[in-house]
Image 1: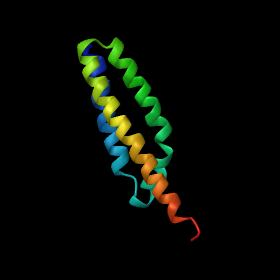
Image 2 (image 1 turned 120 degrees about the vertical axis):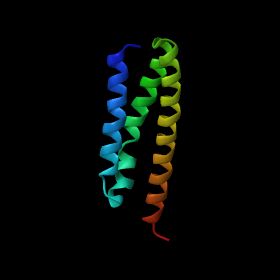
Image 3 (image 1 turned 30 degrees about the horizontal axis):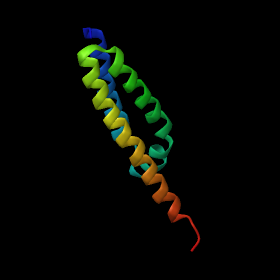
Length: 89
């Protein structure tokens, strides 16, 4: 892994953190629901990175798979809970 790839990875972390912290709490649930597809793509990309990235790529890809999977599962759980709130009793 060269320095430019590592730089892009670190910048993506900072940009993602800044974007998420600027979203108001009332929009977090709908955004999490909508981001499940993006997280699914991230899981696929992370799996590919574990195969072609060398030793560092394997570890970073493994961590990315874990975090993306947590995000996908959490998003579906929150969406399911949100939809239950709108069901008639």
